Length: 216
Image (cartoon, rainbow, N blue to C red; front, side, top):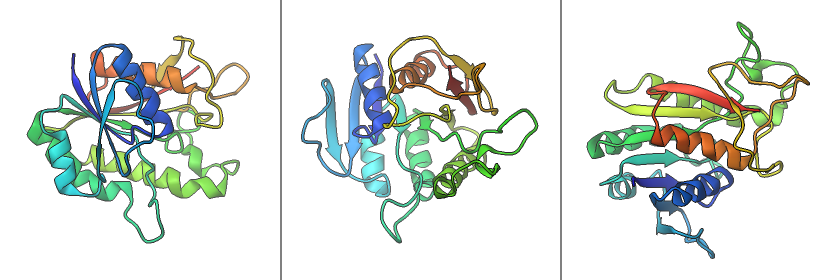
């Protein structure tokens, strides 16, 4: 059993990851800006922000794995972006001897082998580009970070989100830096199957200091 701290455990991806971890017997503590009205079964919570270095250090102490499942853009006008919290998170994770797992974005994946990033193609909705770029900035910060930080960053399929929760199948493909699509050109993954892939990586590390991707 591992002790896993999940920043953003009340959100779409964070909640399904927390539930998957609990189902496999891990101890899960969520960190959220507000206490949830109904906490996911088996998950304890502390209140605080990832942008508060003292909260981060206290929450991460004694953890085996730390999960960031948070919006990459500022959550309020003029507020900090997730990438601005990365230095303090990295310091705390290294001090704890833990591993860092990040729920990433699909926009920074290559649309095809040798091609542009998904967020740079004409069909990518302009309103989503800032969040995609901010996720890409987090990934870049990890890649340029301390060599003794063990991290992984899991990019979902293009069709991933609370608007398309899908079903748990347990069947999916893993890739690298290129967007995965099916035979019909669709790129999808359910929340539950994304969580399976994420927790599999926690239990059986195979992508140390790497971004990888998941889709059907």
